[in-house]
Amino acid sequence: MKNQTPISLLSRKEKIASLINEMNKGLLERNEQVKLMLLAALAGEHVLLIGPPGTAKSELAKRLKSVFVEASYFERLLTRFSVPEELFGPLSIKALEEDSYKRLTSGYLPEASVAFIDEIFKANSAILNSLLTLLNEREFDNGNRRYKVPLISVVAASNELPEGEDLSALYDRFMLRSFVAPVSDDSFHSLLMLSDSVFNPELEVRLRLDDLKEVQKLSEKVLLPSSVIELCKVFREHLQREDIYVSDRRWRKVIKLMKVSAFTAGMNEVSNYDAWILPHCLWNKPEELKGLKDVYEQAVAINGEFSHERLTNLVSIWDNKLKADKSQQRQKNDAKGRPLFINDKGNETIKAYGEVQKTDISGNLIYWDKNNNKETSEKTNRYRESNDPVMIEASFKATTEPVHYSEFHIQGQLQEVRKLKNTAQSYIGALNEQLKSATSIFNDHIWLDKALLPLVTASLENARMHAQNLLSKINKLESGFSALPREDESIYANMDLTEDAALEGELCE
Image: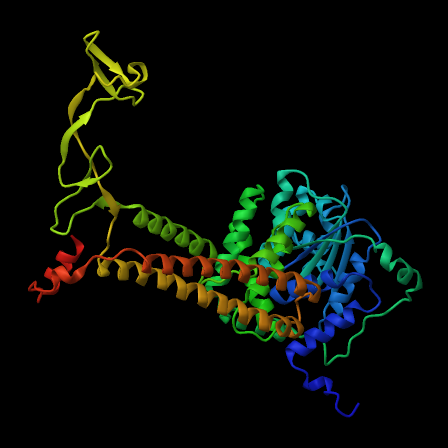
């Protein structure tokens, strides 16, 4: 006990980690909801819990209230018949006597720090507009004035998803969404043995309003690297494929949440790991969550400086260029530089044409049948020695050989391929560093679920394997371009190529 850090000296990060642990005590399988609610409150956002009754949704909200010093709490169950007075307070009789329309808000939602609203989507049009303004702008219209409210976060609950466009705006106000299922079979025994637990953290551990303001202000300075931008693009492509609509406002707030996640974990830059929050922000239906979590596991290896897809495309392009260079043919010359041809005997000759025996359409040799005074093929002629071959003048086919390339051309190709090689090696190096640091980051990061570590590690290893396969292909490209037939450059030995332009011009011909 002597080495235990005094509570008053705990850092903000240590306080938050302690609060997460304390909030989970006495609850089963609610760690995800605890983290989502606390992060939402730190970022000034709201949480929606979807699930059946009796799954500790209101208990979670009450515990969130106790995270903060002197926070006030409001709770209400809405029905189809709920009226604004239930949420915002009754009308002031005294104000009405003075011809003023004003509510008595003390003890109601406009003066709450943390609120729990059950069956939120039962809100009718009389409640909806005021509720939207209060959630988004933290303001409430009372009489002829608009007041700022002290609201930190609203935890809303519902047994079902909203139906109708009139509720879509309200649904969009809840940045973080979580499906709260009943306790699993594995934890059922523990549920039966569970005793009541009161969440009442030490005053020194609780967060103050100044802590919230400081977190939200300083987290804006957290850097957003290109890798996170690329990761968000991958998520957006998935959403488009699955026809899941996410508003522009929601995307802006997603970035804010990732910055708060990174800042409160002690980072000055958002990492791909902070995108753990994205799946919980982007689904519209609970069944969409799994696909979004799969995207996170696969996209966590994305690096903004090294696009795996782009590198793969470039390797394919250069592979086609190598095949094209290898397949190029030119006419062969003899030692004196004269073009060579193949005669009808299959021998090389400098003659471009000559006499050859005529053939029919099937390739049979044609003879002159003296007896019948007409042409006949070797098939019907039966090789009668008395018949003469029919000769015609024909062009000989040019003798070809692989194109020989100048050193200038080959070195140019190799230079570009080696750039690809350096990129692939750097990418592999970055992935190796990620693999080395993944465990320590997960252990040190207060928000990350350690159960994700094996999945993230597998994704990184898979990305590294693909990158190494690309590097192997690039090495083959390098060998292939190096092995291209080269021109005999001795022909340039006696040429006056003092000017660079002249040298380049001659070599390129």
